[in-house]
Amino acid sequence: MVAVWVLLLALGANVLLAAVLAGEAGGVLRARAEAAASTVQVAADGTVTVLDVRDDQALDVGTWIFDARGSVVERPPGGTPALEDAAARLALGGEGTGELGGVNPVRLLALPVVDGGERVAVVVTSTSLAPYQQVERLAVIGSIGAAVLLITMVHLVLRANVTRALRPVQQMSAQAGRWSADDVERRFGVQPRPAELAELAGTLDQLLDRLSAVLRHERRFAEELSHELRTPLAQIQAEVDLLSARPRSVTELRAAHAAIDRAAAGMRSTLDTLMSTARSGSIVPPGRSFVAPVLRSLATARDGQTARPDGDKRDVVMDVAVPEDLVAGVEADVLLRVLSPIVENAVRYASAEVRLSASNRGGRVAVVVTDDGPGMTPDVAARAFDPGFRGDAADGHDGAGLGLALVRRLVLAIGGRVEAKPSTHGGHVELVLPAA
Image (cartoon, rainbow, N blue to C red; front, side, top):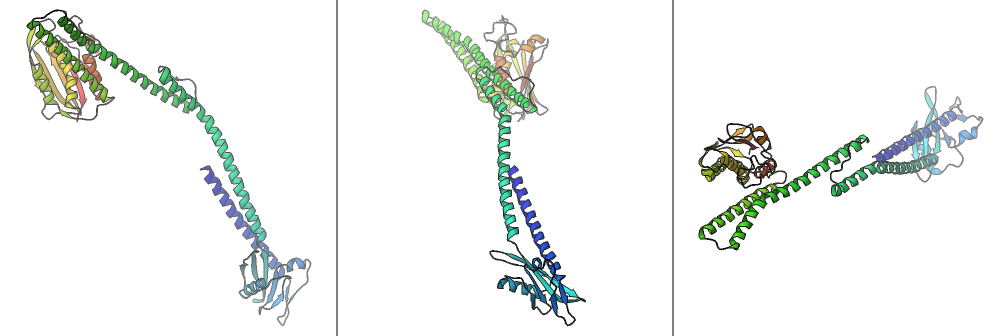
């Protein structure tokens, strides 16, 4: 952009200089013609004569004087035939200007001499344009040289300034790269910096914060996977060891096989949930599913007799209340994996009934799972979805307290939220999901 402006300025200066030089040449010709016209004398019989004046030789240079009939009264010495013809033609036309091209271009000016309202003579003066063109060429060459020099200097200065200005940016970028590999908890902080560098430092700190959060997320993911799989894996190993230790009866073998099957099913469910979360990244790809069939499938699978934490076996009735046309913005298998641990938890603590309801709430799908069990205290409700948290460590449940934590992870991944409500009149968990 600077180069363009410099070139435009140089071009404008040369155009202006050419106009000034052209005007200067015209002014010189007119002044000489007027001076020569003042020496012209006309006799009573119409004869034209030229007075001898001081500096007459200066006036005679390139000057012709023609009478009214077009005859030459006085001509300059050393004129060429072509120049003579051009002067004669211009004199016949009266006042005007003309040019004669060639190696040495010449400009001519005709000025009539009027006496008594009649033209009695014509003065034609000429001047070579070569000096003016030489000045114009020198000006063009000089302006081009000055423009190139100026552009070069501006380029060097700008490059040096930009390099100096970007050096701190390069240093901060390299430092952020080293921290991301070796010490992700380091930050640039709020040290005094120029405004631009302070903004860059804030942006890099935010990137490092997100990277640190991702690393913590992955470490936590690995820990949750390890903890959640350890219990069923230990059960399988224990049953296998017992089978290998001594002969078992048919009843014992059947019970062992059933225990191994339950543990394997629990591992499979955990892995499916975790892999769904991992594949989703930060957001599950858009999908849709009708909520009613999913809730009914959950109710059908868990309707009937169940064992409570205190060992009592009671019939739990599953009640589903959901509009048939309600559509959630998640796929059916994702919705099923999100709700399964919540419903299982409600069934374990219910006295006789678990209610599943859903509705459209402000453009979102709200699913509410309630039971008629003992409910949750504010502390338990606040920590229900924390990894490893158990409301009652001695309730006989063989999980590691990570089922609801996995639910929250998956719900956040699909752009929703989940929370437990404190209550002394039964459990209450509310899940809000995107609508289709």
